Length: 187
Length: 450
Picture 1 (spheres, chains in turn orange, brown):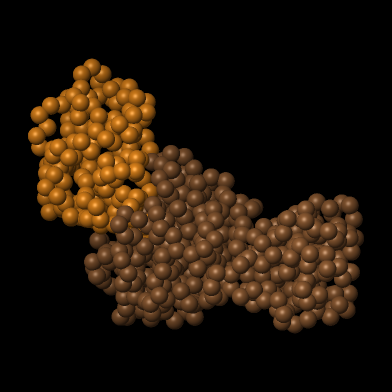
Picture 2: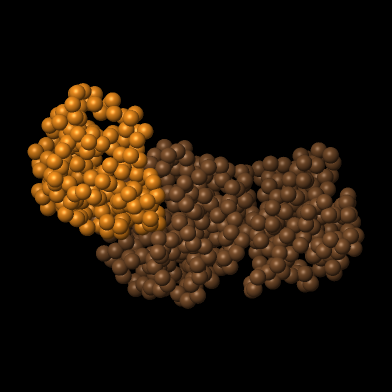
């Protein structure tokens, strides 16, 4: 689990640095991702080689990810959406990401997946567990509305227990209020 | 023989025998005719800003030189307990003029009046021929020149810490008129490792932070442990190999089981006041509702059914009511309903959000986590919603739990570098950090062990 989180962060960094013209992703979202990358600088350097190996070596990892692979999903589709403080509604950027996820999941029907709901640290533990569950649920409902079978997905909430960004300001909190679509490794 | 108490080496002491023993006075002590407890010297702790009572605690006399160290340790544990309560001010032993060499003799009260000691505790620890320890103490009213209390206890040598806590409670009760809270434990979540990959283990310790023992290994994420009021059992939430669930754990045997067979995530558990049921939240789609399971019949009952987050349930001490938090009105607030469910009454109307309600064992207050303006507070209000007071505020206080006598709260504070445990009086005074081996969160205070 911990390694998966690191690897996704490293792939994001390559995407943000190596791919241009990402007009479909909002400026805020992109800035937030970069903040997370800075926060995980050590993890990135430790994992970059692995990611490059997986992606075939030379060039941008995003370009090299095998279509239909887990890397392809994380790098070229985007595995996560973000939420406003104490909110569970999907904003326009989140819906755009989930539209792409739905398209990809339709194309690659062999995958089952888990939607992880998370909250930032500015809430009490029990409430945040329920809040993360709501975020996972709204993500699930949206994917179902886009034609993905409910039987392919599970949800889980981690509340505030698994932040990806660990500073104590808004740049990190906005990173941690998220729902992440994690493809099941065995599927 | 009634005095043969505390002769079990484990901590699962027989409550009835302990109570019998604690009330029994040895012949030599009764010969000194202890006066009715607290008749003259009484610390008024229910109002105003009490000045800590100066109290002298010379080292307990050792029955023989081999008991010197344990006698000194027992004395220092008692002094530490009384000092941390904020109600007593142990006097520096350097000021003592009388050296206590015989705890059966009446002290020279004039020597203790000179240093303004209002109360004096003398005692002795003796190793018996059967290997057990005998610990005895006398509590003296220095100005009246009379004995207020005197008891003796027998235990195995590894139980000397508990003897010290039990004596501390006896002193506290005689001098304040209220039960103490020193012979109690705290279960909490020990935290190690970086924030994004935190290892969390259940741990248990004495209320003063001593004797930490780990109950889980850290393989699974564990949260919100709570004590069973009547047995050596806790309930908590754990992320095991499958969905997160509420578990029961027997502290003595290590035996563990999932509570109920619910179709989704269960969390935020707490025992009923009689220990026979566990109340918790069940996640159903976007909603969290309250359910209770009878631990004997395994029957489950739904208590709330709202399109909201209902969580943090806690029974009143008489078992008739449940307080909990809900965002059914738009934000996290505290509600009270009958233990059988049904309509719930919102009771928190102060500024901001109110969550993690917990009912005092005395029934007089509900403590909570308050959130307003980016600050997280620990506060109390009365069960009818009146009298809300914030005791401490900042970033980020959370999760209060009451001491067995309802006069002290423990909670955790995480300013950003990681959480630590603190205590504070319900008056808002005497905030103290509780020592733990590493980061610590989610404390839950046990009932009195004896």
